Image 1 (spheres, rainbow, N blue to C red):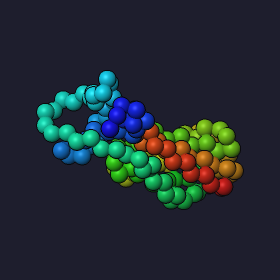
Image 2 (cartoon, rainbow, N blue to C red; image 1 turned 90 degrees about the vertical axis):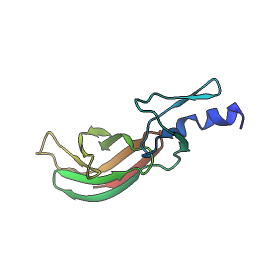
Image 3 (tube, rainbow, N blue to C red; image 1 turned 30 degrees about the vertical axis):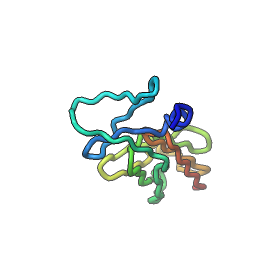
Length: 130
């Protein structure tokens, strides 16, 4: 393929080692560049599938979700309630995030928006009225 096609897919390229873990990489002058501490065989793979978001439930002051990405892994997540940023905690082993309200006297009500981005910059947005 020509360089134009590769550069269009650049944000979705990832390099995986023999254990299929995300390493990253970028196109430079018609070659792929990446850094690794281990020698071995590497494979180019694309990740075009956005992360999965599953709503787990809500209590008065807490809302929880399961977030998962099969290929490259979770890069970032942000939650907003009525347009204001909401602090979320993350448990990597259980693929769970939950809200951590600093002011427990204000219940979670209104429009919640959750944005999850994977390492290949695929984004999924989940909206919910609480």
